[in-house]
View: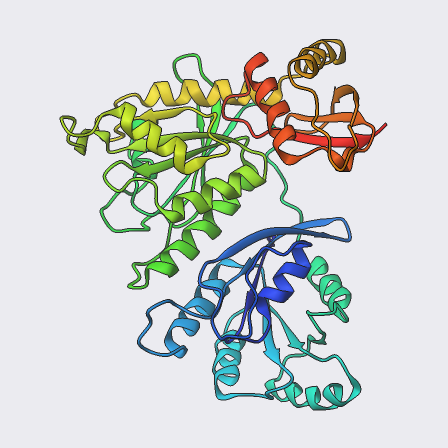
Length: 433
């Protein structure tokens, strides 16, 4: 068992609306036009004490000449291979379509758990119409309205019964996940460190099939490396490469303390790299950015300083992290990368006393007090670190809802100046005194 749930279905059946409801925020774009979701959405949901990842697969590949069928079938096949639970979504207002039946046939052949979600069932008449979908042959069929939420609780109950919380590797030793796009050199990086061909390395994207755990005990360092794959087989559709590699990255990120995000120096930061970066950031994992294949870049026209400035601009607002230019093939700066990872691990685990924090808070308030909102001045009384697995701080104040996001950012930056939180996302929470 695992904890990845993929929502699949043909375009315009309400997948993004359900996704937004399950994760509890309006993240995916919603419109009545078929195929609005062109980018994958990755979020987390919690129900009945189970934490699981939700993926909105979309239903449309941009610039696809073959209207929908081939692209959607391909996406569903990928979801079937990687997800633990498939939520197969259909539309009660249109009835069973040919494409629904094709997708149903694909899923019946798999051994994965499939939950049929009949959407837009928001009155008695549609409830009667929806009975038509029993003909698809899925025992686990749920009638719901993702727009108003009716029936979503029953679907969540069924999902939570079929997923399990990720069981972390119980160890005090740092766990480093190596993530990134296919063919950026993840396995080459592991092999360079271990000093042996631990993983198969070829120029074909996706030769690493599954996540591999490797214990490293050299040069007075001791940690676990989690190498993950980008894709199992070569694909012509670039969006499917992106879909696969992020699904794989999610699995590795869940287990890790610190993520080494490898990017290709010859390609620069792409949207897929940013997707993986944001997944790690949202899960409050430590992050080190490794720019691999630096030996292939023309140094006369491009300097590391220019590259670094560009990378930090793309990663903003969270760009307080190590950026290391390396070559796994030539074993250039690979130990420096590990040293950065260990530093980030220590940064993530540091605990700061309440007295020291409040001394810093007093200094921050004297320099720049919270601005007024609607004539009200929020007054921050004191701050303390929360007992979480990542650095999180609760600021107790009057009128916490009037503390602007820009001021939260100011407090975070002030803490970063006083303490070493390089590579670590920080939680800033305003609480009523």
